[in-house]
Image 1 (spheres, rainbow, N blue to C red):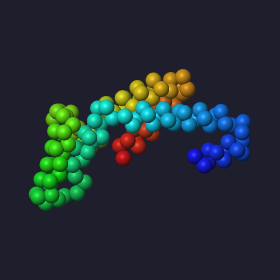
Image 2 (image 1 turned 60 degrees about the horizontal axis):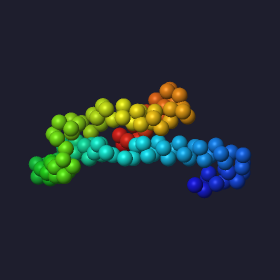
Image 3 (image 1 turned 90 degrees about the vertical axis):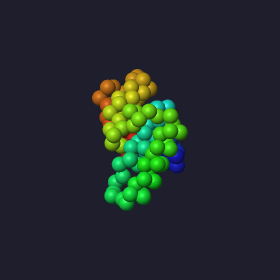
Length: 125
């Protein structure tokens, strides 16, 4: 925020563009932060089921138990859980549709596709 204010103070004629940019950023954040479909829970469950390193049976059982508890609390069916943490193929399409709806008048299709790629990469980390 301090940098934005410095830009506006240095170049007052850019204030309108800076406000528009901040508005676009907030739309992108809003379009990707609401997790109505439990995307994050699905990814956590999948990661617990597929740990990044080998572990003993007792530790593995704890992870599987935690995954099952999350699945049950979120009322997710077994077939809704991706087999691998990043295997939710529909996620990118959902993000792109939301961004297209929010930014169609501001950006062309190629720009929206680039923004979608960046947002999808951030969400997968």
